[in-house]
Structure formats: structure tokens, C-alpha cells
Length: 191
Image 1 (cartoon, helix red, strand yellow):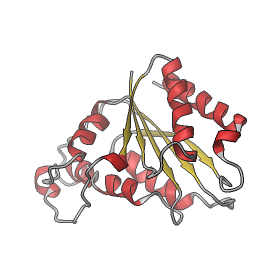
Image 2: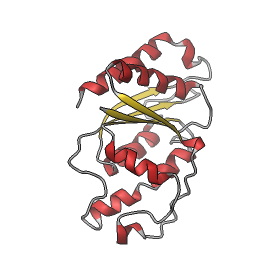
Image 3: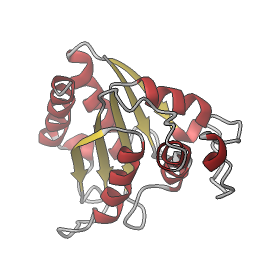
Image 4: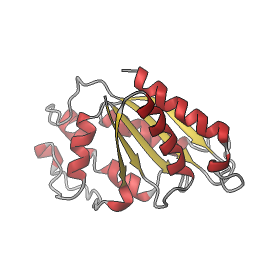
């Protein structure tokens, strides 16, 4: 089994990445091959709504999204981790998501998917918030992720949503880190 674990935080080894690392630990305990990608290290240009993908099923831009398209297509498990920014995902995460319009266009406009629709994939979204959130505090982000996972033909199985990280650093929350590892293990059992 293969997993692509995408970090959409601009910061290293802070709340979001620590949770991602513990999910990866759980996946590796179950012998899942994990490739971690840091979006901040990639060159991904924004979608410009040019509609080229509605004619070809592919984005015309030549940047690091090309490797991500392939990884999404060949992975069994897809994990996206992003802190909550203005009740959604970070800009670098959203830029990646917007560029998956090419998958959507190939499926729903051209009826010729560029992503394998028969491959079973499971997805997890990890999100952290500095302040304490209300019941719907993560809703903006989870709605975006629901559409993203649908576009890449992935069963959106779990959310790991942790708030109040300004008051209590995730690295000091043993129960949360153990839960993240447990979710990693569980993800491998879904396929």
C-alpha cells in the first residue's frame, strides 16, 4: 500500500506537521509506504480558470503539480494536513486543490477521467486551529476537502481536527498524538 501525505502548512514541525508525523507513524507501523510532500517546497501556480482542462483533461501548466497528479492517481491513501486559515485551508493547500480542476473536468466534462476511477483510495484531513472553535469552526475547511476528495476519487474517511493550539501546543498533548497514530493504523485497514 502507498500513501501520499501532503503538508499544507508553511511552518515546519509545528502543530499540523506533528499530527501528520504521528499519522505517518501509524501508517508505517502497518507497513504502508509513505511519501511526505511539503507544499511550501514546491512550485505550484494558481489555476487561472482558462478552461484548457475542459478540452484536454489536463492542466497546461508545467510545474510541480504534474508529480502530484501522478501521486494522487497511484496512491491508496491520501492525507492532507493544513492549519485553519480564515476558516479554510492555507493558500498553498487551496492552490493545489484548485489545480485538481483538471481531474474534475476530465471526469465530468469530457467523460474521460485522467484519474483511475476504479482504484479504491481512502482519505484523511488533518486540520489545526490556534483558537478554540465552535461546533462548525472547521466547516469551511471540511467542505473544501469534501469536494477535493471527490474530485480525486478518494473516500473521505476521517477528519483529525484539533483546536486551541495557541494555548496548548499539540506536541504537549499526548492523547491527541496517540489518537493521530491510531488513525494512521486504522486508515490502512480500510482498503
